Length: 168
Image (cartoon, rainbow, N blue to C red; front, side, top):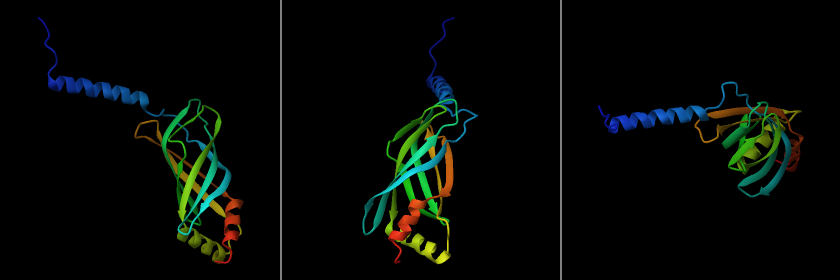
């Protein structure tokens, strides 16, 4: 008996099975650890009436024994429990090498009004430390799977920004 070629439903099922198998190969590993990020440098690149742009150099440390292929990297910079700025990685694709660190440039844009609000909070709250939280996520390669990361600390450079706007 000669087998007839699969019908439309058969081809659809075969295609779906192949897509699932290919997708499984692209899944992040079960033992995936998020990268450790820390702020290496911060520089104001543009000050306008309605916005401030600054560039942050992050040291991203990959604790995994495999490369981390990342796309669609997004970050939130929170100061005094207020999301001050949203940022994005300059390169659309970033690969963090296995068991290594890489410097990753990030651009942040913040509306001037939001920055002034944070500076007012700083002045009125009697804060002795300028703390921040940097949190975000990235896609595992071209998949829909997110890899979250977070870092908190004290950033003296932000204190200098407060001094710039000290008369507010």
